[in-house]
Image (cartoon, rainbow, N blue to C red; front, side, top):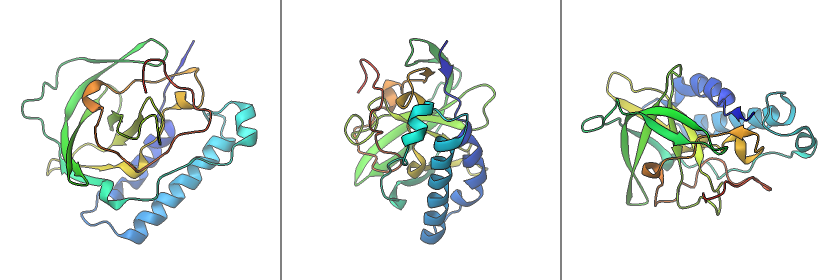
Length: 212
């Protein structure tokens, strides 16, 4: 039976770093330190933790994940817009193993990348505090994993704003091991702009048929 993508490592670390990443001003030194520590911890998790998505033989030869350089322009602080969004509709996402996972829209966030406008939809699911952002972009299938990447985002504060830090965008576990069942980003989150931040492609990644 396929294993469901847990997001366990990222959920814990996202909650820990939320105290810093939601500041109104990005301190470059703090950002770089946090990001470097996060990536080192994740490499250790992949290399040695029994919950790692890597197969035992992969863990033996694992040398670390590949990333884009830190990019503070892709730390997005924006309004989570809900007007005109049906937040009660069931959004059924197909998974990489032919299953389904059900979410609902929490809202949309508008931003721009090098002068080009983009919009992403954030999703909520029962039992999860964080909002879920699965997406593909212009780098997918080239510099990054073809089936897309994920982010967890803290819910909006009293001002209605959220922080989307694409430097923490990560590959789903099914990129490393096809036994994991991971939701495929829906079409509304297939971006025309390149998101050159976060994890890059993994050598030998398992691609999903019909995606990428």
